[in-house]
Structure formats: structure tokens, C-alpha cells
Length: 90
Image (cartoon, rainbow, N blue to C red; front, side, top):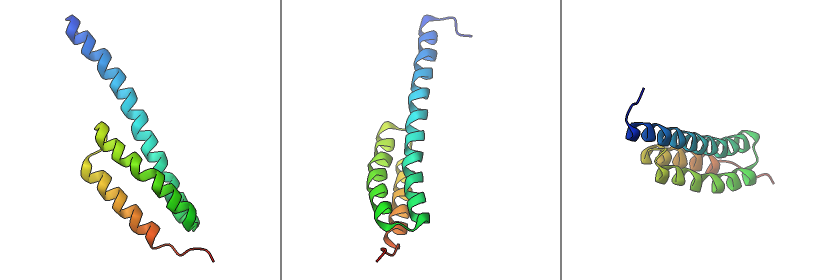
């Protein structure tokens, strides 16, 4: 266990940051899941709307440091390709 005041403070800060970062990652996963569900459901319009909402969340995850830049880029690219390949319901 930490004995120095600075070490105790670092532990408190790390616990707070961990909690915030877990919430951020969870939020990103939920946005991506909405896109996946819309794609699997076959609803092109809903998928486009969900993708438009998920893309900025992935970018924010990179800026916050919870996702690697290439990981977010890969996820955006793959989701965009899947949404693009969907046929609109006529």
C-alpha cells in the first residue's frame, strides 16, 4: 500500500480516470452496437443514422485516449462499407 501522500493521490486519480474511461468505452460500444443491429435488421435508413451518430463517438474516443487512432479508423471504415452495401427498402 502507498505510504506517500503523492502516491495516495495518484491512486485516487487513477481510480477516477478508470471509471470515466470505462464509461467512455461502454458508450462507444453501445453506439457501434446500434449500427450493427440496424445492419443485421436490414434497415438502411436506420443504419445510416446510427452510423452518423457512432462515427463522432469513435473519434472522441481517440481524442480522449481510450481508443487507438488506427482501431477507430478501422472500425469506422468497416462499418461504413457495410452500411454502404445495404440495399434501401423500396
